[in-house]
Image (cartoon, rainbow, N blue to C red; front, top):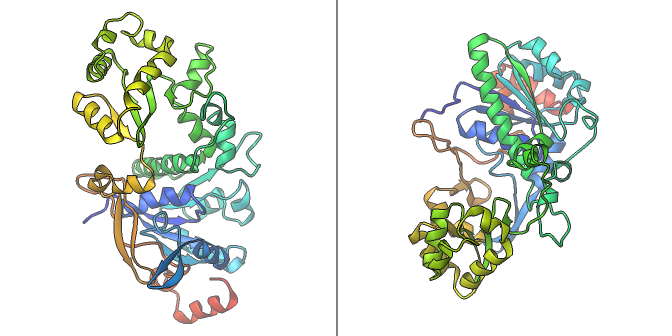
Length: 401
C-alpha cells in the first residue's frame, strides 16, 4: 500500500523521546527514516530493556520498539571528520534532518542548519529543545519535568491540598514530537511550492503552554488564576472522576443543561433539572462541592460497568478509569488496533503500540520493529551512497561507523 510520505527521506539524529516520536509518525506514514547514532548511543539504546521471562530464560527486550519502528538504523561517529563527511553525503539524498541535541551542539559539529543548508538548500531541518533556540533559557539543559514546571502545567495538576504534580509520563515530549511532525509536513508542502527549505524550532516548553487550553487567557483576559482542582474539571464541577465499588469512573454529567437533565433522570433526581441551584452551568459551577457529592452518592454504590452502561445508554459521557492492563483489553482500544503483535527475529512475538494515524487512502503502517544499532549500514553506505564494502570495513575498523 502506498504511504503518504513514501517520497520523503529523513536523517534522524533524534534521541530519547521527543524526536523519535516525531520521526516515528513520519515513518508510519511511509517516510524512509534513517536513524543515525553512534555505536555508544546505539548500545545504550539497546541496553534499556524490559525484563521478562520467556521459555524459562530471563531476557531484556529493548524498550524503544514502537518509537523506533519502521526506521533504518546506521551508526556514525559525528565527532570524526570522516563521519561528518559521510553525513553530508547523506544530506544530498535527504529531504529532512531532525535533531534534539542541546542548542549549539550541531553547530559545534559543523552540522548546524546553515552548514547543512550549504550542502542541500532544499533541506528541512527540524530541532526540538527544552526551551527553544533563543531566549534566556535557550542554552540551559532541560527535560520534560522542567517544561511542565515552567509552563504552569504542574500548578494545575493534582489536588488542592497537595503539591504541584507532574504528569505520569513525559507529556511535553509527545506534544512536541507531534507538533514537530506537523511542522515538517507543512515545511515540505511549502518547499513543494517554493523550492525553499527552512529551520523548524520546536520547544518542549511551548508545547506545554499550548496544551493548557484557555487557562492562560483566563488570566490575561479575566485576571482569573486557576490552580489545582483535583479530579474536577475547570470547566464545571459536574465533570470529574468519581469512585465506584470497584474503582473509578470519569463522567461529564453537566457539560450542557441537556446532558444534566439526562443525568439527573438516570439517577432518579429529575427535580435537579429545574432547581435553580443546579439547573444551569453557572449555578452548578458555583456549587461544585454539592454537585460532586450528588454524583459521588450515586456512583459510590455501583460498579464501574453499571455506571458506564447506564449513563452511556442515556447519552451522558462516561468511561471507566482503566489501569494499563484494562486499557489494553478495552474493546475500543482493540477495535482501533492500538496494540498489535509482530514477530521479532530475536525476541519472538511482541505486542506493541499501534499507529494512531488512520487515513482512508494512506493509513499509517508498521512494517518492522526497531532496528538494532547499525543494522542497515551496508544498505545505506553501500546501497544508497555507492561506497564499496572495503570502505565500509575500513570505516568500521576505524570507528567511523
